[in-house]
Image 1 (tube, one colour):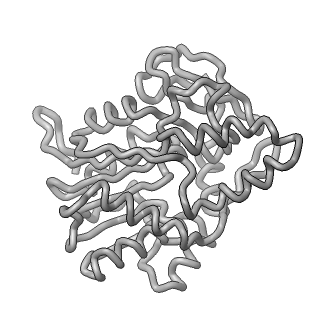
Image 2 (cartoon, rainbow, N blue to C red):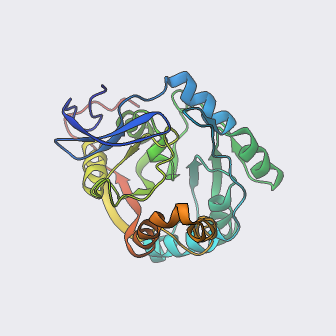
Length: 283
């Protein structure tokens, strides 16, 4: 069984099983993580094709969501207020179809240099057809620096989040900022955690405390934390869940739907790169 990537403890307890994969809870820090993940090359290939293998085939390519842009406008107002950058460079990692980049271009009136990195070939093609600057960057060897880097609904897909964050810090200018969106759900019981987990597309689930500690350990100072109901206007999963609830075999999902709607588990963290004392800068 794999140890916890956050506190390195090998002690964990079974939490849930889905699609042939085991989700466990670290007995020390509370991180939820898949203890038997696919091999790295399998994960990378799944991200390119948007298809994950398990007991069942999981297709996560989805579709372009223009209604989600209203949510992104609200979030950016809350996170930045009057300090929203009107110049500089912004890299959106795992940009999908590019809805967030479109909002950045709109709010900055085109004065921001926006870039997107997306492994999924179908999402990337769609974004580029709409005129967005989107490629698939080899971030392990990418040396360009940015004023802001964002990861929206990306963290839970990462095989090694601490190392990924350390690497990204090197891609930020001094005082540059990182914006991360992920769920604040590690504190939920297995009974209350909303389903499905979408394993093995999702590999871990954190809490605010775990993620904030990880960022601070890697030379990033928390500026703001904002949380929202999981289901928001523009989220097509609302419609899907409503349809499923009509069917008897999905009636048990009612409590999860209520939990998603009224709990502020959709978390955005804004953090700034600060100079680290007595630690070597590997940049």
